[in-house]
Length: 269
Image (cartoon, rainbow, N blue to C red; front, side):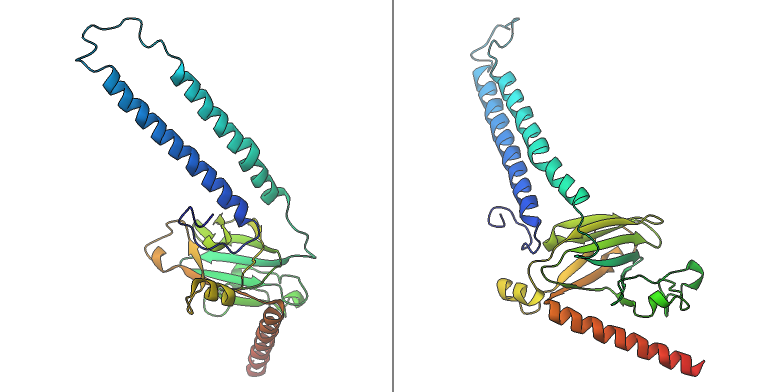
């Protein structure tokens, strides 16, 4: 589909169906645009003043325009019922189970993305708004909650394993933001006070995409798709898709680093 539409390179399992739907919609729009343009040109020529000097009170006798309108409506119904609704239903009702998917929290704020991993135990640590500190504890994790001992928090950096479903639990600390990964064909608003969810499965690692695009510096970007303030332009995050082994090694290093930092803090206390 990328050959027919100027889309970013595809890197998710479900993205092909979305690209197909967008191609069909664009084809329908093109047919309607060309068809009505030709019909308008024919009408201007057919009923020009030089040929039609006297008004015709009966108007057009052809039913061609009516048939064309019915055809457009039928095509729209097919796109909606045959493609859009099933695709939407699959994304909303077909969430993977917690056992097969990696679950990640992404908390947006002006102007950054906070990424929260539950760590090896798979349980997110408890957070309290009173504990929020933008420098040391941006998500307000409770240090007395044992479930949070192995949690990992990164800023503007999202790491995911390839060929494994990921569930993103999305929320915002201040205003409405738009979480968008163009290559993954996902986009969802991050709302203050409300947690929403989306899921997808990456199919192309960052390294493989660099080879595909011929760009050694290629990076998947997390874009904010909602105008969220005067520094909206700077709200950029980065997604790294890697092999399962590389992701596990990265996660282990992050957990060890966090525990080491916690031990240092406890020592000086």
